Length: 221
Image 1 (cartoon, rainbow, N blue to C red):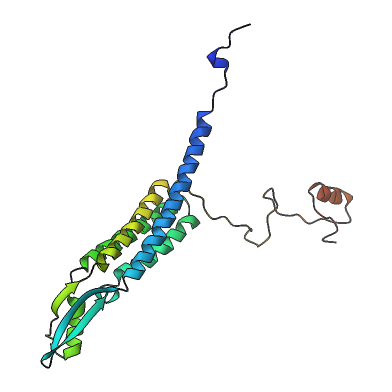
Image 2 (image 1 turned 135 degrees about the vertical axis):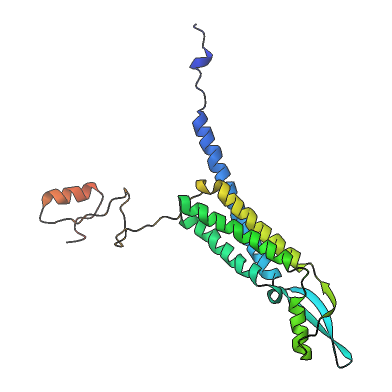
């Protein structure tokens, strides 16, 4: 018997293995980006409605408690979270350069939301405004000012949106895109991508061609 050389043994194709690994990595990155973006936006929207700061103001010899929600301090995180959600959906509606720009917008929305939350974590402007409105004195200032952890929770949600944007920038080219099922004139495409042709019942050759395509030649008759 002749020897079987190593060259005669079929080897797995490297290209196919690389393609499978790339497709698997694309699916994982897509799932991760969707999860991070959705959770991050939900965290920002929910935590922005919580109390960020508390304090008191003196009125007529007594004290009145004051509190400010995230939306009172700054509306930027909420607005950017909505923009991030829209960008997360729009990633699948565009291709090439458009997808890159939308992914960049997604990342910037998360970064901006996190930065705005951190900047508003120690501010007192919202409570000072409430103190002035409560006392009727424009010079009134909040007292015994304290801050909660909700601004930092909001910032964490913004960072999740930022991570989703970074994943889209890195792996977005391998993600699927939306495709239309109909042509511009609204006619459905045939299975092979061609439009359905009209059959003339008075022409036998058209009838045979329709039967070959698997169509009912009497439908349009």
